[in-house]
Length: 254
Image (cartoon, rainbow, N blue to C red; front, side):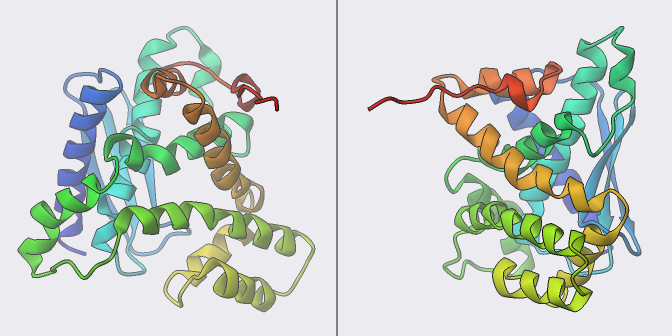
């Protein structure tokens, strides 16, 4: 864990450069550091401190899989949460309501949807795995073993739907052991991942918020696929006050 802040810093720098080159210009002088917490109800979170300063907070309670380094860096950093907060602070000047953001709210459906798509937007196909292998993994003696990182992360996004189902079980008052068993069986969570996942469904506000991930990912994915210029639509999510109802997808007729 002692090396993680530096590794996150490298990932953020690469994600930021690709976001600026492929999607939208970013403010000069932006600073993003990393802090490892001894325990947290999340794996990582992007915290915008205002202006050009932000921090990515990482849960130090469980090991960090380096195959997820860019997935986390893009989701929490660029073009994900930190990029959105920094850009909206500068592009929506005078909109006082932007200064207060409630987590269980429609805008965060789009924010989390963007977060889950973030890596693939700037690292298409196997670009993330290629960068990680050449810049992080091989230096630590980790050679390719045939795993397809992009496919694994795609499945990870789909399985957020299982967490939504588990939230419904928790809301019905089902025993925590039953909720945990459901996440293990259908969400493929291991013993290291399970405690924080269950905690997220039981903390105040965590239960309804979990729906933002899968449904935001699905809605945004269909909207981005329904255009010849997905980068333009990503810029809109990053700089405009959009709601899920603003994302209309053409219906095909037979």
